[in-house]
Length: 487
Image 1 (cartoon, one colour):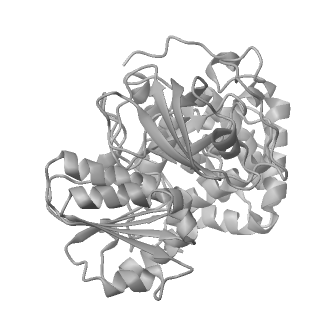
Image 2 (tube, rainbow, N blue to C red):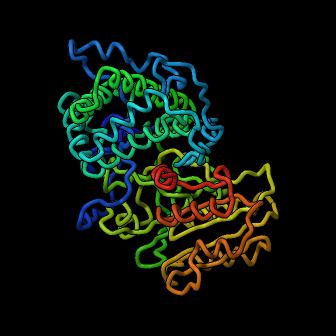
C-alpha cells in the first residue's frame, strides 16, 4: 500500500496547533473540567526508543556504544553479554501486506519463563523498583532533559504532558516485567514500533531518547546504579530500539502511517455512548476483534484506542462504540461534538483478539460496557465464515441503561442458533459475572475473549484460569491490563 499522499503539520506527526494543521474541526469543544483522564496512547513508547547517555568521562562514548542501527538482535534482550537466546516474534505479529497486525494490544498471555532471571533483567528490575516511589520526578526530569537537549522532538509529543508521564512509567514497567519473556516483549515492541510511525518517529530519534532516559534513571536510582547497571540498560534498550526500528521499517513498505476518515454517521445511543461510523480515504484492512488508534482534529497528537464494532464490511465503512468518560478530551469530543463530515485520523490496526478459523472450538465471550463492540465483531466474523461453532456471550453492565447494544445482540441471537447472549446486570444479578461463568460451564472446549473495563478483565481472567482454561486460550485487548492481570 502506498504511503499517504496527504501531508500534515510537524513533518508527518499528528498535526500542529489545530489551525493550519492537517485538518480543521467543524466545531471546537471546550476542554472537560479536570483535564484528560482517558488512557492515552500518546507517545507512550518514547521511553522504549533508547540508547545511551553520555559517558561520565566523555559525552560521545556512550552514543558510540549504542547506535540504534547497530544490529543488536532480539536475542540480546535480557542478556549480560549479548548471548544468543532464541527470540521469535509472535506469529500474530507479522506485518504481511495488506493484512493487518493480528497481534494484540496485549500479546497473547504466556507464562513467564521458568528459568532464573538473567543478570540484565535483575539489574533493570532493580532500577525500576528503586525509582518507582519517585516515578513522577524521574519522568519529569527525563522530559526536561529531552526537550532542552533536543527541542526539535517536542512536536512529536502531546501538548499536555501529565498523562504522558504516567505512560512512560507503565511502558518501562511492562518492558521490565517481560524482559526475559522474549515472545511477549518482542511482540509488544514490534506493535509499538509500527504504531509510532504516525507520530513521525524516525530511527535517528532513538539515541536522543535513550540518552535522556538513562541520564534520568542514573540520577534517581543512584543507590543501585553502577557501571554494570548502565551497561545492562544500554544493551537492553539498544535491542529494544532496534526491534522497534525494524518493525517500523518493514511496515513502511506495506501500509501508510495513518488514514484519514470522514465521519458518515453519529448515533447517540444513550447520553454518554455514541456509535460512530467513518469512511477511510484508502482501503483499511483489519480483522474482527482488532482495534485501532484514533486522533481527532480537536486534540492533535492525542490518540485513543477503539475497537472495531463490526467485522470488515463490503462498503469499507468502520464503526466504533465510544463512551464519554469524565474529563475525557477525546471521548467527549467524539460523543458530544463530532458530526457527519468531520475528519478523524486512524492509525494502523492491531490486536490478536481474533478468531482462529482453523479450529472448531467454541467462543466464550465476556464483554462489559463498550467492550461489547469487538465481541459483536467476532460474532459477525463467525457468521460470515459459515461456521456453526457455539458462541456464548456474557454481556455485563452496571444497569439496564448501560446495555445500550442489547437489541443488536439479541437480533443476532435470533438469526444464529449457535449464539447465546446472556446479559448480566450488576444491579439485578443474583450472581455476579464470575459466578455466572462458572454456573454455565464447563468451558473445556472453548477459547475465551474478554473486552471491557480493566477490573472486569482482571476478574474475568482470574475466573477463567480458576476453572481450568489455559492462559494461551484467553485473549483480551490491553497491554496494561495484561500486566495487571498477571501480577
